[in-house]
Length: 204
Image (tube, rainbow, N blue to C red; front, side, top):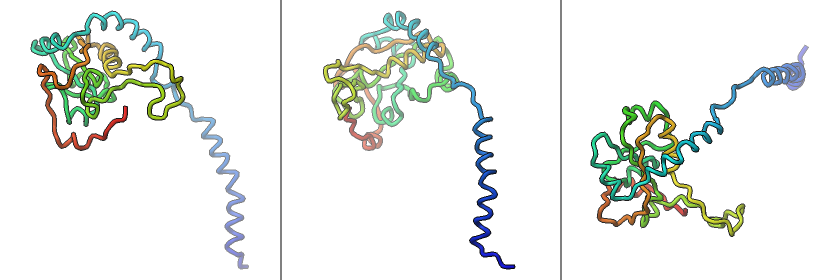
């Protein structure tokens, strides 16, 4: 007896559909995951511990440059790799903040007693392409979720960088605490013009 192909296909769908649904339901019921490795309480405790220490390690440009000459000292740039390659303080090494782990930091800076000098975009003025400010200004760029009268917020990379370095065991951390003109003759930069051409203009 010849059974039309359409009839056979329909019959197959009807008898297998309940099994497919049951398999999906069983998977949903039995698949469980542990909680994410995220602790806001740990972060709050670390912030509270770091606050007074950081306030004593904020340095001027002159102090920053003097510390840079000491032995067992590194200047760490935690901006994105393309920004670093295009332009950074002379002698600085790079590890983007998004790549911070105990392993990557230990490979880059094995000795936790090393003096680490940090800076970020918000430390320099006069180059909004390679050192764009991280400030949030209510109402800018079409963002209307915040009240227009709310004050601007400084969201600088230095703060999470400091907190995370401390959390990973580094204690001799100093942060540049001045907004330096990019043309200041005391400051030397280096970088690759090829990467400068790849950096898009940042509206913020």
